[in-house]
Length: 187
Image (cartoon, rainbow, N blue to C red):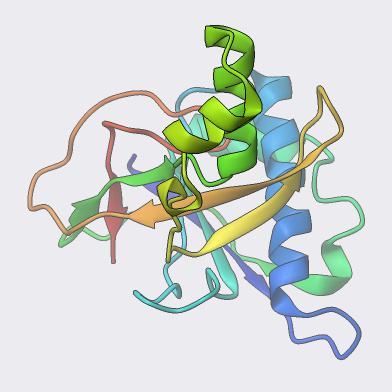
């Protein structure tokens, strides 16, 4: 995590920044799958706590070699008119760290009921009694709207940038650039 790249989305009257970030992030995910990378992390330096979106900047974190390997792929095709890509830069020495992770909750009581009926042989009435509408959980985190490559179904990827830490935590990143344990620098 000694280098980074900032990708700034440019204002566009036809495409809101959230739509552009969804497209950019989907392309990044496919590139990370292609690289089979577990060493590149992401952060959203312009995201604000309590704000709806993730801002207009996607920061990629990794080693110089890992980031250059990513840049050799044509994953930014179609996005070049909508973004400004900074060169790979070393991370400033005075930094703090944070975990950027995916957060999931059971948010659909109907789906939970169908699952309970299938797994436990419940009737619809029993499932409705066991799992009331109030069992639904809602998140107030920023998210990306993506499409599953395996099922084609749209889904929301809720992102939490955790509290600042003085020391980094080492670990791996998934193909979304997120980690439950590893940190990325904040500056």
